[in-house]
Image (cartoon, rainbow, N blue to C red; front, top):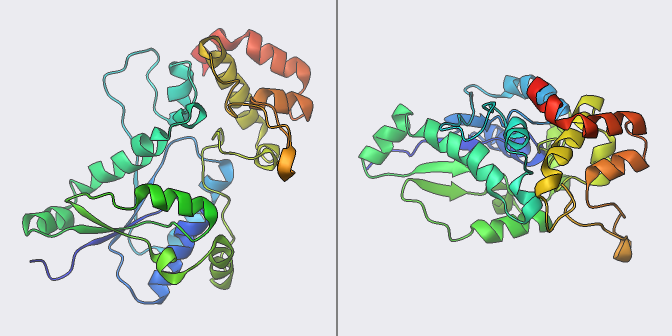
Length: 274
């Protein structure tokens, strides 16, 4: 058996995984590699935070999904261009969740499969320890419940924040105690799980891409309205919003109506330019 299994932290550049790494480093627990899977479509603020937090990492790597066997033209090199090329929306908009598997989990596993410590560990009958930043909040509780019991002969999955009983508020406090800025919520800028106030904070270019993405996908949509799936009327304290983010952008003047109309009308030509 190996003396100690190599330890990999899956870093999403968000609050939870950042706090997890800070706390484990402070406790002197080993982390042999930190992997960030770049979808190519993260929020602008997320990309700004990455070099800031790299100071906390003795070792790090950036991995990216590399698509093969393209079915459409032009080829895509990010989750955003994947959606535009295929005239579709992220799988979460259709009630599924394979974006993370394709653009985050798969590339990290591919990288690890070529990492010498992992190869050595597996050759000696061991398992690589993978640290996952799920906290004890209700949202992560659902994600943890979905993942619980999943077995992989190559990995032992560990959830340090859940071991500590930390909520998102605890994670924010831990990052602030380390003297670091609190990163934004980690997600693609067009994530269907995004809330209205998050859309308000997007850049003009990000908003334009959302309008283009929904315009490209609209002819194929049968059961949903757009990235937000269905309208929310606002009962039970929920924030009312339409089923597509383009309508929200119009309603709140995040882009001018004429610009939205132009993007929708020119969507086929805009794809080629994109």
